Image 1 (cartoon, helix red, strand yellow):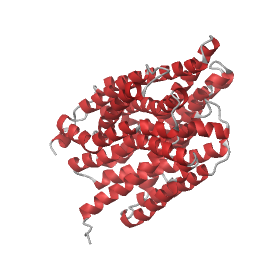
Image 2 (cartoon, rainbow, N blue to C red):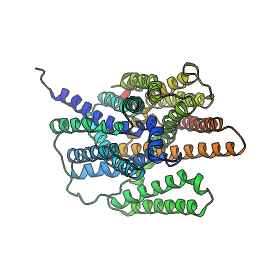
Image 3 (cartoon, rainbow, N blue to C red):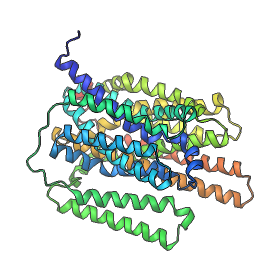
Image 4 (cartoon, helix red, strand yellow):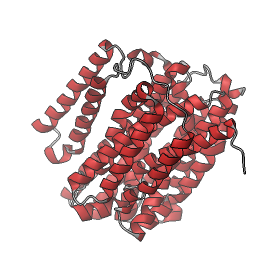
Length: 474
């Protein structure tokens, strides 16, 4: 029988934490290939359908920081298990949902549980691996789960939707959640709880989450309500007021959710803006390319899932080994910039997708570039956000970068999907055939996504090389 040494237990714990994180990440994209089936079954409109994705991403992003802080106050192990339980139960509710309201509410609760799990998992990984070399390797594994997990979700969603029904993309979480829960009871270390367990910033979490949700609601419904309508303008104004309230709270509260002084750190600030732009491009790619392949090319859900497989395999190869080696050889800045640039070129290729596109000629090249770009970029993006902060603030920094990524994805997807729908409606009104108008709307969204990715690549060049040498010389 193999003896479990402390070193082996450390990596076993990482595997279990990443398995829990994989389940969380899957649910950001696993629904994408099932969206047409969900729309038909539950009667969603094209723009309202975005809420099946955004309800999850908004609560996930909104509660990441509070989830991490609750872990600090009440114990990482306890909070991790509570979040995991909440996520698994919400998955069951999604799986049996028979109305739009039930599905969206359950997705929002899923996001809340997922936020707690993800924030605490990353903090535990940072605590587990203190050596720069081992941390780079561990973050490579975590980076693959976050970047490659999205593609795995699309493939798994296609398989489950084709073989069974869309309900099973959520029900599959039940055995995984139970298994991770049982393993965590055995492997996770005991909790060290802070004495000041009453100083968490609930007001900050509520105001920033409400502000973001109102902003995305206004963007998603802008086409139907009218961009200059009273409803849209008042909703955006309410979001702005809540955001200002959040800033005021963070300046005055004893233990702020986001200490604003943290953003004086150059690498942290740049990496967070980069994450927002990159996530907007990535989530638009997952969402819109799945719709393009199904609505325009006529692919089945399984075919869409298989179409993402090359990108998934490349992400795995780069995230699990090659990315860490590139970081140790060249530092953080150049791999991040190059990865984002390649992804931008891949999205630009998607922006020319024809009505009669072929997989090998039109779909595969963009998929390959996006796979390489995501596999190379995700790990250095996370490390860039944490390299300037003190070890005691690493959990907060990881929560901030994850929040930026999820918020960028939610708001970016809402904007690009709304612009695509608006452009499609404009073309149809001008007499363009419906399918051609839909395709041109998708092309516009891909082009804007490419712009976001290329802008992120340019911005990443302003990162400093400070504190990267510890990784390079490990």
